[in-house]
Image 1 (cartoon, rainbow, N blue to C red):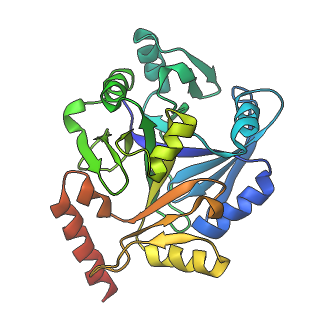
Image 2: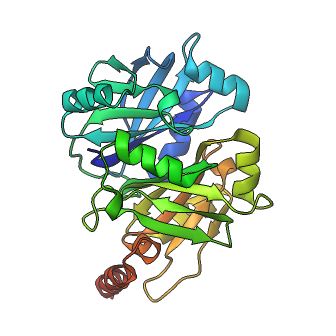
Length: 291
């Protein structure tokens, strides 16, 4: 059912200031400003690449105000696109997932997921703008990755045979990537179960429980984003360069509205997503284009 990781939702106390951050770091552009009664929020949708970064400011009582009161801001939720929202609504009803419909969007009951607040929208093709191509991954830290994977396969009608196992001693987790449509795209939910609570992801899960941890985006030119961050005096951690240049970096939460953001060079994520050969071919092509 799921087609794209369509949008990232960030709770903020000052949308105007947040808009400047998204513009400066990712080259995002304001697409719309409106209100979301289902979340009790005023919303700015900024397009970055083909995706939306939604900035949510509390507009009275509701989920966003509660989140801000508890955590002060940060990664609030994510949105996925589908070809047919009416068909999606029928499917959710069939699998006993409650939702609220507002306009053309569906807002799932938070109890349906493992700390991943979810919005469903009708898919729209957009011409990319800014410094990234699109968002492609959200990381959902959980106590039981198998239970989460089974649940998401059911409620989102995903083909579990396309999932790719993951494990990392460096970051202290194990789990799976719920790839929606490989090898055409990398869009997925990374479901991560903590294996080492002494590391950053483990400390985050101990504090917040099952929740959203970060998101990833792809860019043809990671170095350009690194240059933006350097000019801003913002904190980030680059990966080691290879023959095609900088393969990725992590943007520190202090530099992006309290959210940890991963940027990977186009196609590079296939290295850990079940098709390293594909990643190497894409890197070779990118290197050739720069010559």
